Length: 232
Image (tube, rainbow, N blue to C red; front, side, top):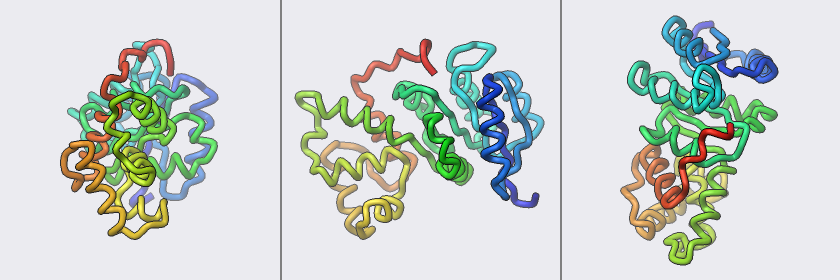
C-alpha cells in the first residue's frame, strides 16, 4: 500500500481492539501494522514498524495509570514524527492537558464515543499525521464553562461569537476550517481571532499548534489537574 497511513492500535480491552481494527480496516489508505495490549508492546511495535501514527487507550498495563500519555511523551523524544491519537472513556480535561503539555502538534485527544462515527476518528488520524492537533469538543466545552463561571474570568469580555470561535481554536482548527464550520468568511474569522487573543492577552495566533496550546493553558488555569489515576 504505497502512501498508506501506517497505524498501531493499542488497548488492553479485546472488544476495543477489535472495534478499532474493524473500523479502520475498511479505510483504503490506512494500514494496521500492529495491535498492542499494553505500553511495552506499543513501544516495541513503534520501534519495529515505524508507523505514521498510533491510536491508544490511556490506562493500560504495565503501569495501569496514564500509560498511553506516557508513551506519547516518550515519542516526543524518540519518534517525534509519529502522530498520537489518545482515546479516553471518560470526560477528563486533565488528561487532554497532560497530553498537550509538551506540545500540541501531532496529538489528538478524543472520547471513545467518537469511534461510533469512524469518520471522526479517521479525521483525527489524518490531522496528527499531517502535524495538526485535535481536542474533543466536549472537553473544550467543560473547560470553557468552568472558566466562564469564575467571577473575574477574562472570558466574560468575549462576545458569544468570539466564544464560539475560541472553542473551535481549542479543538485545533485552522482559520479556514473555522470559517467553514461557522459559515463565516476567513477574513471575519481572522478579525475575531485577533480580538480574542488581544482580550485574553495570549500570544500571537499565527501558528495553529501554538495557539491551541495557549488556549488550552488559559482555559485550564486554576483547574485541578491531578485526577488522572482513577478514570480513563
